[in-house]
Structure formats: structure tokens, C-alpha cells
Length: 368
Image 1 (cartoon, rainbow, N blue to C red):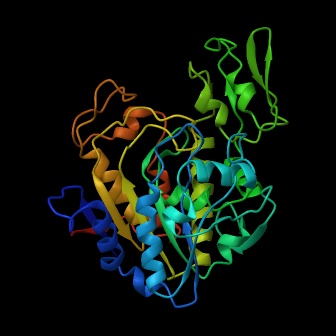
Image 2 (image 1 turned 180 degrees about the vertical axis):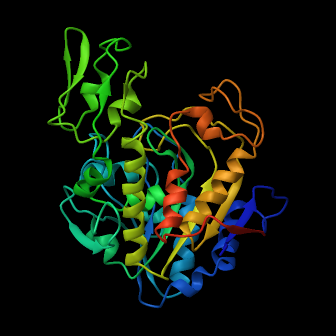
């Protein structure tokens, strides 16, 4: 059965068709008013972006969703979880400072910020899901405790998932450190022939598992938690994993975590994907590479699989930009995420999401 996905493009000739009005219209058209009740503590789940990144969703756009939630008499708060890797969001203090530096101040967004897994990612609760990889998943307590949720996702490429959208935002973004570790749970290896011994992997490894000896990087497998941050920063792409087995399982584990988040807010959760600045890497990186396709628009749905499938399809319909990280598949209709990383089957999260009941890959695209 197909799900409804609402879409607005970026054309505007009046103040009634600007981006702010389009977001407000999407919220109403997708029926999000019916998801929220007066008095709700409503989680606005998003990513504040790593220091050095500017690809995150604009706080001005976030304000439109906050105001819509307030009209319903609910109490919105902006939320995310601390990162597994060392960076500017590894604990709640640094995380809040980064959010403020990026413009997510109360005077701009109209909502307070709550880091949902606590000061040091120790605020955890479990949700029973009874799936192939997990019977229970460990999620951030303050996200699960919310009465309703609106999930705002910047759709882009990703080093391990192929692409990051609503499913990844639910899964990794909704989990504390222990849950993120359960999802990754893959071991990283170094191609010694490619390694140049630059040491960037050792600088970012949260567990000191990356070690430089004799001008080469080595991974201590007894310490490695499989977060993949070393892969993101390696300038010569010498670090990887078993893409044929480990990656598929990791994407399935990630999708099961997304299922747990959605189950905790069954029939009380909506999704908006922002197809702007579609970069090759996650917003967890401390940089933004050049976009791989033109800006497209915004989508809204109550189905996370359908909205990610529609986003995936819309990106792939575009002509890819030259002089970007795309190494192939520039033509319209070609898989741009395969053009970025041919070894990743990013559609695993879509197929498995449908298989476990997270949502439907079939969708009706309603153009507003």
C-alpha cells in the first residue's frame, strides 16, 4: 500500500510562495496538526551540525515548525543526541554550545534545546521491537518520553549508509552512545598499501583504537566500536570495512533502531525532509563538500520509508554536478549515491524498512 508524500519545489514569485510559507503549507497539508495534542511535549528532532559544517537545516526553517506546534497548544523542544565520535557534540555542554553557534538560539527558533541522552549520553531507555537483530533497542530517554515528534532531516550522502535521511535521523540520532555502538558493531580495517600515516584517524578515534606505528595506521580491534569516523577523515580512503557482509547488517541494525523510535511515537510522528545543499557526507563531518545535484525542495509524510524513497528518487532524477565527489552516474536517472560510493547499497535501509513494517516504499507524490 502506498503512502502519501507531499512535495514543494523552490520556485517563488510572491511572499505566499517563499520557503517559509512552503514549510507551513507542508505541515498543514501532511496532516501534522492531527498528530499533536494540546499540552504535548513535542520533540523536534534534528541535527545541529558539527562545528565547521554549514549543511544543517536553517534555524529560520525550524522556527516555522515550532510555531505550528505551538498553535496546537503543545510545547515544542529541539533535540538531538550526543555523538559517538569525539567532536563538538560529544557531550551535552559542547553540543549546546555548537547549537547556539549555529543559530539555534531561543530568540531565533522559539524553542528550548534538550540533549535527549543527557550530559554524557547516559540517559537511556529501552523499547521492545522483537526483530532479527534486536529484541529491544536502547534509545535516548527524553526522546521516548516526548508525547509526539516531528523529525526534520537534511537529505544528503553518507560515508557508511550511502544516504542519510529520515531513517538514519531516527536511528543514529535517536540513540545514546550505547545504542549507536550496537548499530555500528562492525570492525574497521586499514589498507596498508594506501595508508600514508597522516594520523588523522588517531586524532578523531573516540576509543584510541587507531594507532600509528612505523608510519602506518593500525586498528586495535579489541577497542574499535565501528563508528566509522576514521573512514570519514581518511584523505586517501585507506580505511574501510567488509562492505559485502558487515555493511548490510549494519544498515539493517540501523533500520531496526529507526523502527524502535517510530514505535515509541506510533501515529504521533511526522517527517520533513529538506533536499537542499545535497552534499556527499553526513552533517557530522566538520566540513561541507560541494553539492552533487541542484537544490530540489521539501517533502513531508507520516511514513519515514516513503519520504526517504521519494527523496532518493528525486535526487537521482537530477543531472549530477561535475567537479564534485561524484565519480560516475552524472546522468539524470542514475543512482547518485552509487556514483559517490559504488560499494554501498544504500537501498538496504529502504528494503529492510519495508520488510519490518517501518513504512512503505510505494508512495504517491502530491505536488503542492
